[in-house]
Length: 154
Ligand SMILES: [Zn+2]
Image (cartoon, rainbow, N blue to C red; front, side, top):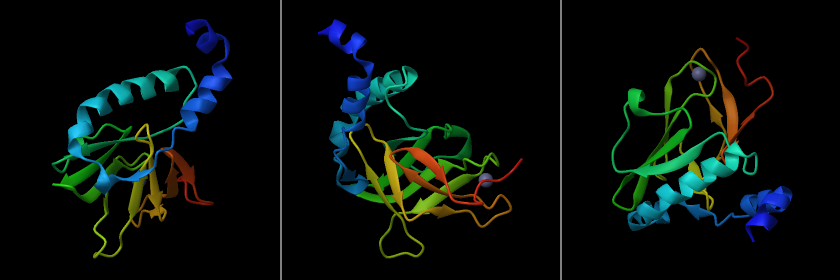
């Protein structure tokens, strides 16, 4: 079994990437958080071996992160009880600013985030920074996808 996994990395990669049990972040009970840590460890290991692709992974939190405690890889979904309120991430354009996207359906602008099995986030719509960095990108299955002209040239 182990031998199969080692000799067929492309099969492992396809399997890993098809694990798309997409669930809106707000419907995930926090009691599965323990399992999430294990899943995250496996996801990072698969990524290390090039078997799973992502730039960002989501984690759930009950409190709003401060800029200093937001690792670049993390997308923190801030929830109040079972209601997802915010998704916080560090701007991928290099300015280092924290971006807080409202997930509240009654506010504008608002975003929808879905997580796959590995907690790779997909955001709709795209994120367009209105500050000087002007980043414009999509996040799909945890990958940053730059819009034409949306990537700052440093
Ligand atoms: Zn920026």
